[in-house]
Image (cartoon, rainbow, N blue to C red; front, side, top):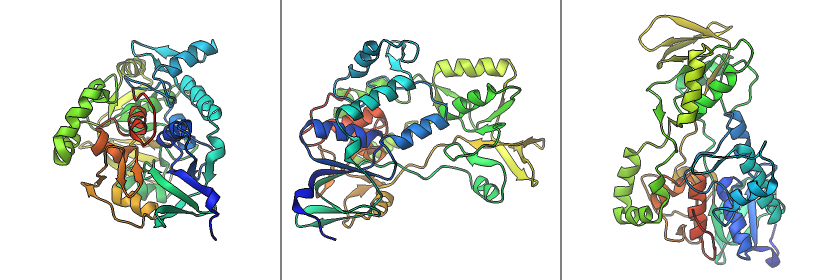
Length: 386
């Protein structure tokens, strides 16, 4: 099936999550013709469902926590709505609660008409055609674009090998990002998602929840150091070179911390007996009824009617993403990451944002701050990154 020439887009964005939506708003504001390809029924759909799955209440960042242009846009929105019961900003960094972020995001999406630019499909291949990019879709007509932005993360859930084996046999074990109605008696994980899930489960009448974690909880206000989102860090980061950046990323914790406020709530739940802190999981079995968990190195078994893995997702790699979208050209990589130019260009008009941009942007790349940084560097965009 051919493509009529008037249907050439300036940009095709692959992915309708935080990064794709942030970039789409800025590109549309710059006057670009944009199409967003994502199989979900609406923008930010997977982000919304994952936030709900882990019982998120507050966003966590020392910088801008939204998808609009000006850093203070969300703050003005909250004050303008005059709904302090639902929309709240907390602490010296004015972190928004989830409701404030979602309402503001919905306003941004509506104001810029982004939903009508959403093509509900999956990209099957991207290849060059006459100096442009032909983007084939599984359930929609192909698109022809001058540039493509890969704004994709990972759908591969991180879980121990035993969990998949037992779950396939019918054991009451699931990842937090999988649907399930089993009661939550045991939560496995050592980061903010695990603590949030355990706290939410412990509020049910008569609930007693065990939280299993391998190492002591690491308490940190933010999911990355504030300095990493500053302009001076970016200059130092670029001076390191690809190998130095790889070493930095490997040495620096990227996951598994809990903010102080949440840690205090957890301590209160532990003191009241609603949550029991356990050590690392040793053996896990299943007798056809309930799962049985034991501490590493201990023989006592704990029967469970519902085990939830709050263990996150696997980090995407450049080769895996290239295969996933059928990218029909080889582009430069280092340690599994794309080597990106100043305008987030991977080469030949393919641009990248999100977790894959770590080598270019540093530890903030997967976050909302990273979405703003990457977007601010795209050709023709005007956006204040923090």
